[in-house]
Amino acid sequence: MTPTMKILNQQVTFITCLILSILMASSASATSLLPLTLEQLSTRASLIFHGRVIDNTAARDSQSGQIATYTEFEVIELIKGDAGDRHTIKQIGGHLRETGTTLRIQGVPRYIVGESYVIFLPEKSSLGFSSPLGLHQGSFTVNTIDGEQVVSNGQQLEQDTHARNLSLPLAVKAGNRAQARLGDFIDTIQSYNAR
Image (cartoon, rainbow, N blue to C red):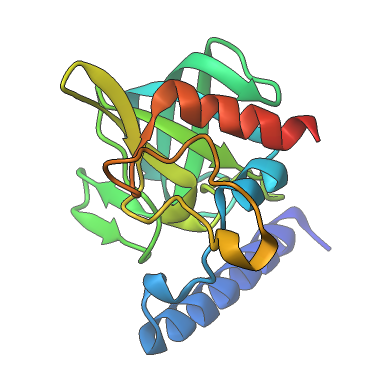
């Protein structure tokens, strides 16, 4: 197989998978993903870090030929896995300013330069893509509220503790079950991975 045929074959495979994903998403929204608990996110992720976005760049990906967004994070705290002081994730989709072309995939998180997040990432795909686990579920925004850093992805952090006779995870903030104190949240993630 010639190099040109190889590239064409990769692009056709990628586009076919993308079309199937879009067709499935058109009949169900991103909220139809199976919910993942904090324990599942923590133990399934190969890389977890607290970081601040320092750059977002959309470009045509050289491996897939698709529009991709490269988000560079300054790693504030490495929680699990291996990463340097900076880590870049490549996600499908984005906006190419020079051509005005936009590709948006429902559920793929977008990041804002200057904002902080706790990110749960799986291993990179064969093409180098790595969106958070469960898409938006594996991306927690870090905000300062009343002088305290808290995390949230908009979903309840508590689990059904009655079914398994467990106590609530350390991460749940008593006043708001969709938020957690950053320090408690990180401690909880680390305790899940210490088992």
